[in-house]
Amino acid sequence: MSSNAEASRLHIIQRHLSRQFSTGAPTPLATSMAGNPLTSHVLDTATGRPAANMKLSLHRLQNAVWQEIAVKETNSDGRAGQFLSQEAFTPGTYKMFFDTGDYFRQQGTTGFYPYVEIVFVIEKPEEHYHIPLLLSPYGYSTYRGS
Image (cartoon, rainbow, N blue to C red; front, side):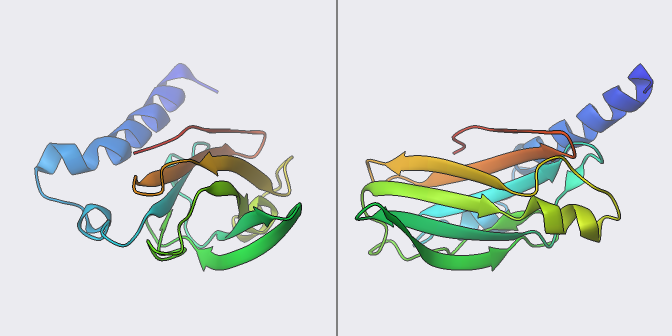
């Protein structure tokens, strides 16, 4: 792969991630944070585009058993939210399940990871938590977003 193609994809991803800061206008996500304590965003780093229509689910660990809380699908911008209300967002261990196998099938490609699970701990439910996923067919990365 040429370094120009890599630089182009990196530029697209950087522009996408910083778009809300360059316009000065609030994004739809920023304006809907109230009562939306947990959000996610998936970017396909192989294409430099949001991962639209990816199925994902939120689970909570209760008595050593994962309980499914909500099932969502990313929008055209690769975003999902409204997993649970602020009142239902309590301290504990949670898991976000991303159906990457189905997403890659939709894209007409295959990937090494049929799914990605991100397990995280909520200690301060009054704060906003954001679970981003940067994805390619043969790798992924995540971090605690804001």
